[in-house]
Length: 109
Length: 115
Image (cartoon, rainbow over all chains, first blue to last red):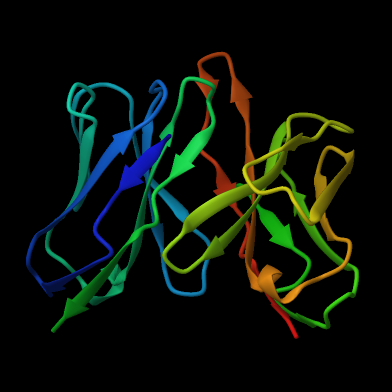
C-alpha cells in the first residue's frame, strides 16, 4: 500500500530551528509537496520538490532524497505564527496526491 | 490570486437529510477535488473531476456523489447524511500545464456536523 509517515506533534521555542521529517512509500514518485494549515483553515502551499536536494524559500527550506524516500521541512527563526500543522504529500506514478496525516507544530515563547 | 470559495463554513444537518456542498473557483482550472479531513487521518480524496461532466471516484466515495455541470463549479452531495460523515470538507482546484500538474489550491473548508 501507499504510505506517508510524519510525526504527529512537535514542540519548539520561538526563535529556534525545527525540522519536520516525512518518509514515504508510494507506487512511483512525481514530486513532493509541503503545505501549512492553521487550525480551522485550509492548507496553503509551501514548497514543491521533484529533484534531490535543498530548496530554500526565506525562513523555510525543504529537502528531498528520492533514493531514501525522505523529505524534511526546515523552519528557521521560528515565530508564534508558525504554530500550525504541516502536511507532506506525494504525487505517485498516476499523479494521484497521497497525503500524510500532518505534523502539529507548537511554538512556545 | 486563485480564489476558491465554498458555500458554507459551518453546517449542521440531521441524519437522513440530503446535503449539498458547493465549490466555485475563478481561475479556469481544469481539475477539481473534494476531500474530507479528520483528526489523525489526513486528507482523504472523495471524488475528483478533470473536466465538465466528468467525475472519478477517489479513495472513499461511498455515501457521496458529485456534479460538475460547469467548469468553475463542483458540488458534493450527501444523499442521506449519517453521523460518520461529520467532518471537515475541503475543495481544491488544480491547473494542468505542459510541464505537468501544478499545486492544488484549497477553499476555506466546510465543517459539517451531522446530528
